[in-house]
Image 1 (cartoon, rainbow, N blue to C red):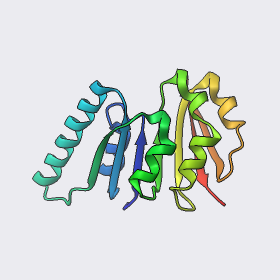
Image 2 (cartoon, rainbow, N blue to C red):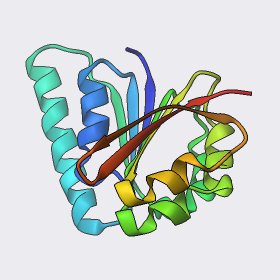
Image 3 (cartoon, rainbow, N blue to C red):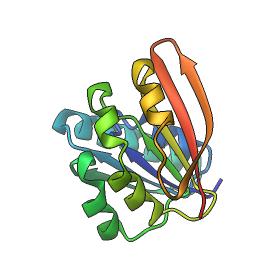
Length: 156
């Protein structure tokens, strides 16, 4: 509740919208596919319409037209701290994205205790979990069919 969320490679926005439905304060959606951006905007509009209909306070949302692979350049412009970061890259890009550059940039924009959820192909899971990146601690790993989800916690 009251978390600030960043949904990277947002696709339809489902992960960020789920956080908002559980009372997150805000969500920034990062997606570079034009078709996906349109889908996110439509889904966010529907979500906000339902908030109004139910007389709920509408959270702050922003759909960003950005290249998710260039997170280090994007984060300083957002000028926010994120409590939850959900990253679901195309599986072919997962290993390259999970790098010291991107995770270091995220660490600078996440407070202690922030959570990073990273989704990748099960075949790439060992490369991801074997990566040691300053500022993040692997908390949990789960495999669902061909998908691996790792949960990292921001530490010193």
